[in-house]
Image (cartoon, rainbow, N blue to C red):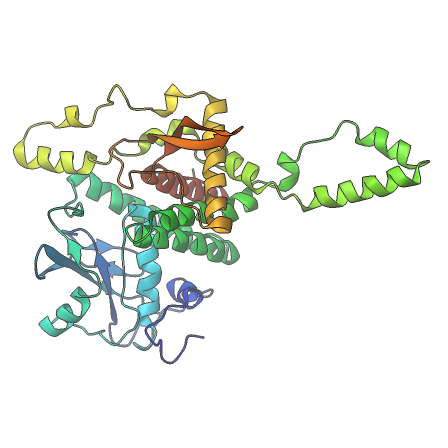
Length: 390
């Protein structure tokens, strides 16, 4: 049951059953209802899904270098009134952000719902998500034909999955999707928070997919210790305490790494586009000249096949450590380039105080784009497995 008044605040738990009711009941009669999406790119054609339609964007010119990109959404027929319709589009915004790797917003209330996007409504919506369209910090606002086709294809794929898996799994996955969504919304405000949210999005799915007993190491001496404990009371007490402490170890970091290696192995990382690939494709389309040379591997770049399995596992383990340091110490990950121009990894030097002296160590860090891709692909592959879709 959603609140009568949102108070301009989001409780995402209210959005989950509105995006996919546990029991879908379609009302054939009644007025068409609409919601809105605020994108950071221009959607040039409408997208049609089984239960709803996302219309092409209307562009609103704002002061300075800012624009707004607004898409109206024709809502599913399970809404009888406008009151809680905005909860659906917040859920939808989360899914689109998860799939596209971009920030997407939706109004936090339904007061602007109307059948037509008149100038008043456009103005009210535009100020909720202004986009820098040129200059420093500009968004990549135009999709190439290939990017548009892949977005459409990937959205259709995940909608089928989300509406077909068991409802409890759907709810769990939607919470992770929301964390990815929040990561993209918060990246510019706080890179560390965005990075933390991406890793946190994977964690609950990883612990669902990789059970503790699969990664917990077996102590070969345990049988021998149990024999000693039968006759040694002090040793028996120590063994019980040891086992109690051991049982508290959930091996979350290890399960995180194993989940990625199983559900998004490095061979799949090559499906990740170069950060400038969409722009180069778009320029190539309007100029008629290939721009592939601009996105080819540079001599200084590190690609997944440059690293051994052991090195990749160590890098992924460090990712989880950085996430934990943000959680418990408020310490940001050691990245220096929030918008990496490299396809997969960045190199950074960190100073450490060891044995009374400072040492500078070079470390390899997965960039934000790669972690976003891993979160998307690993969760998607897990969903496919549960839905028995290849």
